[in-house]
Length: 110
Image (cartoon, rainbow, N blue to C red; front, side, top):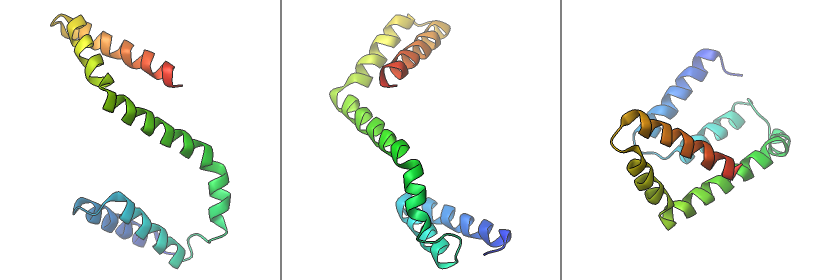
């Protein structure tokens, strides 16, 4: 196992690479490969972790797909225009409508 100091430097390097235009998927894959190479995790751990998180992962992907569909259909633009109109130029009222819309939308998804 690596000392904590080395963990910090590996995380800092991954953050630097992500900031330099390398997508998060590549830095995550690099981190996973390094964790396997240094013995932090073992291949036998993968099915155990997958069995724990598969349903949350599926739900997360479903929320992303629903969000993309709503965005493509123009729902978010429609909702933003209506909430802005309901606010009547008053910041506090607009804030309340945004909170209520978010609460109601969250209930529809969950």
